Image 1: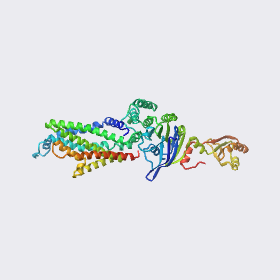
Image 2: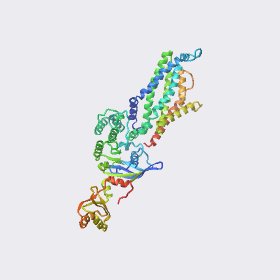
Image 3: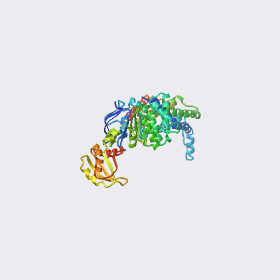
Image 4: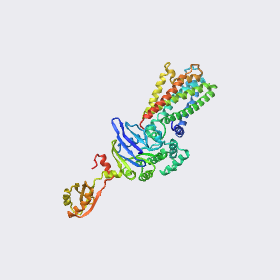
Amino acid sequence: MPAIKCENLTKIYGSRAALDGLTLEVPERSIFGFLGPNGAGKTTTIRLLMGMSRPSAGRAWVGGREVVPDAPDMRRRTGYLPDVPNFYNWMTAAEFMQFVGELHQMPPAENRVRAAELLDLVGLSGEKKRIGGYSRGMKQRLGLAQALQNKPDVLFLDEPCSALDPMGRRDVLNLILHLRQTTTVFMSTHILSDVERVCDSLAIVDKGRLLATSSVEELRSRYVRSAFEIELDAAPDALAVSLQGQPWVVTAEKTEFSNRVSGLRVLASDVDEAQRSLPRLIAEAGLGLARLELTMPSLEDIFVKLVSGEKSP
Amino acid sequence: MNGFAVFLRKELREQFKTSRIVIVAAVFLFFGFCTPLLIKYMPEILELAGPSGMTIEMLPPTSGQALAEYAGTMSQVGVLVAVLMAMGAVAREVESGTAVLVLSKPVGRLAFIIAKLTAGSFNFMVAVALGGLACFGYTFILFGDAAAMGFLWQNLLLWLFLVFCMSVTLFFSSLMKNSLAAGGLAVGVIILLSAVSVLPWVGRVLPGTLISWGNRLAMGIPGQSEWWAVTGALGLSALCVWLTWVTLRRKEL
C-alpha cells in the first residue's frame, strides 16, 4: 500500500489551475522529492494532502486514509512543516513543543522527553528566549522539530531547507536521511542538490502539471543523451566525415572544450555500438585520443529540459 | 471538540503573557473609579466650567445614576475593546500562518474557535467584575448607598452583551482576510442591531435591550423582565460561533 496516493488531484483558483490532475503514488518509508520551480504547485499539493485546502477535483489518500478536512485520525499520524513556519511569538521553543505534543494528546512525560530530544536534535535545546526573537533559520529548525513531535508515519516538508545556512542545511538533510527507515517523507523543494542527496524518488511539476516521476537513477537513465565527448590531438575533420556514415550516430558536432582542445560531441542512438566503434574509427582516422567520455546528465539538466518543454530522446 | 482544553489553556496563557487581561481590566477599572467621581461632582464641575453668573439647576446626583452611567459607558467602551480583542483572533492567525500549523494537528476547528471565545469571555468576566467592584465600592463611599443586586444583574447583562459582541467579531474575523475590515464590519453590525433594538417586538429579542434592562435594574426602576433579549443574545452568539466554524472549515489555510 502506498503511503501517499493522489488520483487526478486538481486545484483551480479562479481561472488558473494551481494543480492540474496530479496522479502519483509514494511508497512507504521512502524519501520523495517534489521538485518544481516557484509557483509550480508544490505548496498547493502539500496543503491538499494535509486536508488544509479542498481539491476542485480528484482524491488523495495518506497512510491509507482518504484525505478530508478535519480528519484527526489522519493528522495523528502525519507531521507537517509549512513553507514559512510561524509560531506564537510569546512562547519559547520548549513551550511550543509541549503545546504541539498536547495537541497530539501525548502523555505528559513522553511529551516532555520527546520535545527535549528534538530540540536537542535541531540545536535549540536550552534556548530560553521567546520565538518572536528567533531568526528565520531558527524558526525553520523549530518547525522541523514540531513536525516530528508525534513520530509521524508520513512527514510533509514544504521547502525544509529554504531558510537555512549551509551547515543548517546539511544537518536537516542528515536528519531527513535518518528518517528513511521509519517515516515516509514527502519533501517539496526547488534545490536540486538536496533531492540528489536524500531522495529515493521524485516528481517534477511545473505550472501545476506533473512532468515526470520516477527514482532519481531511472530519471537519469531515461534522459541520458548517450552523448560522447571526444578530445583529440589534432583537428577532428576526418573523424567527423567517417562518423557521418555510421548508422548509430545521431549527430557529430565539432566543439572546443574548456582547455581549448578541439574535439567532437557525438550523440549516439546505440551506446554499446558507439563504445565499441569509436576507438576504432579514431584510430582509422589517424588521430590520437586524449579523452573519450560518456556524459551523464545532472538532475539540473533534466529539470531544466523538462520545465523548458524538451522531451526525452 | 478535539483539542479544546489544550487550546483553552494556550489562549488563557496568551491573555496573561501578552498582558491583554491586564489591559482590559485596567480599562474597566479606570471607568469604574472615574464614573462615580464624575457623577458625584458633575454639578460642581459644570458650575466651575460654565460662564460666571450663569446658574444651572440640577437634581442632586444619585448612586443609581452613577451605576447606570458606568454601565452605559462600558457598553460603548466595552464594545470597542471586545471588537479590538476579537477582530484579529482568526484573521491574524490565518494570515500569519499559525492557524495552518496548529490546525494541521489532530484537533477540530470548532475547538479552536470556542477556546478563543471562552478565553475572551473569561477575560471580560474578570474585567467586568473588577470594574464593577471598583464602581460599586466608590459609589458606596461617595453616595453612602448603592443597590447591590440590581448592579450585579446589570454587570452580568453587560458581560453577556460583550460576549455577544465578541462572537460577532469572531465571525467577521474568520470571514475577512484583514483584521481591520473584520473589526469595522463587526462595529457596523453591532450599531445596526442596537439601532433596531428600539423597534417594538423585534427589539425585545435583540441583545441591545440587555443594556437598557440592566440600567433599569441598577437604578431600581420597575419594568418588564427582558428574558427574550437574554435568549436572543445567547442564540445569536451560538449562531455566530456556528457561522465562524462553517467559514473556517471552508477556508483555504
